[in-house]
Length: 104
Image (tube, rainbow, N blue to C red; front, side, top):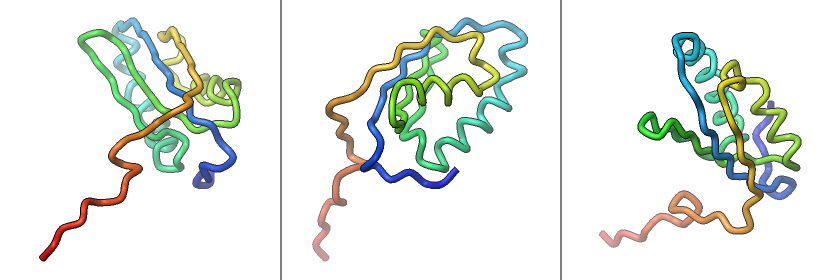
């Protein structure tokens, strides 16, 4: 995959609820390798997991919800997930701001 240009993509927030078992944990390394590839290519802006609530959140750059679903279908953990996908209207964070000016 090539790095993504934001101009042709929308941002989608993905909320995942998951159930774990012994097989789930054995699939985590392959899943992390896949997620790392999507982060490295700019498909995923952020990825976070709460083991406390068994939820995961991602911001994914894609042309439509179907493309988001296609990305998520390729992970070995997909069968453990219940997914919500929402197109974002506003997405702001420190990452998208200019660095603070520091006077010498």
